[in-house]
Length: 364
Image (cartoon, rainbow, N blue to C red; front, side):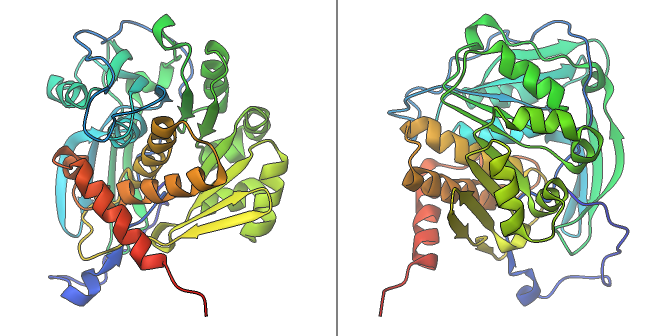
């Protein structure tokens, strides 16, 4: 999630080309999904397209993927442009990235003002919206600004609106997912969704400092039933109450998760499984326009690949981390989900190959 900062851009005017060769950030940018508490009304499953069987890149998918999170309207300003009320939210970013790999369904809520064109886009990605509720009131909105240090977002305004009283309900058709991702909301609501489904093969979750500090006990109760925790480095240190990420990983893995993934922005990703550590750098990009949602796209690529293959081995987890990094690297190249709108699966495979070439070396 984004870190609030009062820093100003270091000067005006265009940035020299060499300074724009930046790294794709993971997990430090995006809307803040603060507490959802209660209430439910209406569903927007109307005309929902069945899951993504048959799409290029999804052939051979072995199981369905369910995500709980937010669908929002974001207004974002960076040194490279500005957009107003574009499609955002953790579930929207996650599901779009995951849809390149597997069938994915969404549990979320929007207001009566949510534009139909955004729902049309999600349906075009074959994302199942049966569990997306439309309620009276306004949609969750987030407004933020980035300086040239794109790893940090300054939150200017958060309007929870219908998301504030959201109590997730899992339709009967979604109660046996193969895999489940609990995006960043109140840990009690995350647990509530977990209790509504038949135990999936894999459960992963995200969280943020707001819950780490305010609902620590509830979060640790949830972690006992979670297989993978995906958080950024600041959140990991707060959760583990230690500045050393290796020490933090040991504490968190003892709390329940078998795997801990720590997103480190421009420094890439660390994955801890038992006594093993796997590290992936961020992909070097010449242009980064908007880091919002990069962490959720990482999680979508990670979980989507695992759901597609059905494999949960150490090697599969490592490949999934790279695919997650690939999806995050595409997401930051444009505002909102614009880069993923025209993305083809061959582009994903090409960048996966580039990741491999970037990190391979021969033994002496």
